[in-house]
Length: 399
Image 1: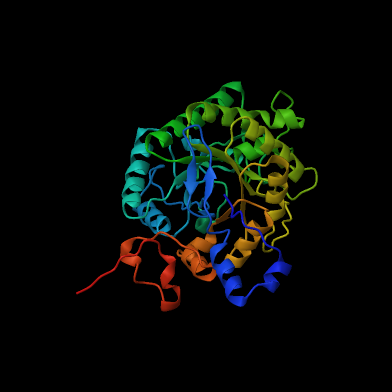
Image 2: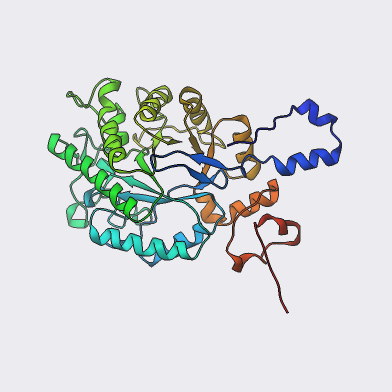
């Protein structure tokens, strides 16, 4: 819960400077606990900073590799309160690239469990979330450093699927429109992947409904031109994502949420208002959080990039639903994150590339905001003298 002590700027001006310093050091929102609900019980996060999911394009036939072991160990030692594993495909043809992580059979589950268990042993006790995904018409792509374009079967790719036979780019081969059997197959694949995640002790699941991938494709009138019960008006376009959510909720007892692109950034696309309405439906169906991003479904999108550019979307969703909301996108500075939380625009702050550049970003934020973080004892002596106090329960001795 956020700190309950509130004081006006005017009152702060009247305080003795040392009292002001005390307040500054004890009321950091970023370093206050937050609790997510779930059918299995509360999941308490030590602070409000989260490692957002980041594709690594380093799997071997969907199986986690030593790269994942190294990457996960590093970010589990970041000081963040929760670590979200990258987009993890629920079927092979749902991968963004041939190098993407998967969780669709015993082999992919065993590899993921092995690397994750080993990483968790080398870090403080940090809750783990996994993002389950299907890329839809944006599947079968080359890795970004290999050009990122659609791969043909001859190039190691595969035929893609989507809500409608509309390609992401005009020059691409159109995806196959999913029929009732295909929809049911994917829905059950999400549920089975969730069961595998729960079996290996993963505390939370985020369904990927953003960035132009399959669930977002159904939500958006840009990609969804169906004329049946899964296309057309809002109720129909949200039907399949809701069915997937409900199928996962029925079998998974940890914290469950969805990442949503709040805007397509094009005319006549998915809107922030629809995002808020959809989020409320998720809440009523048992969602424990939403993670608000934007874009990805339309090549002609025009995104107004800048610091906090997606925060107004998170604020709208939080105001209309009252559910735990994660803000993300060009949030790079500790004070910036703190201000978002102080204003009440979001409950949690997710960072992605900032963690790749500064894997101990949370440590730096704790030093700046007078917070406390957990760290492995091997690192307890690493901080400069002015930041020695950020680690919890430090006990050091030497002859």
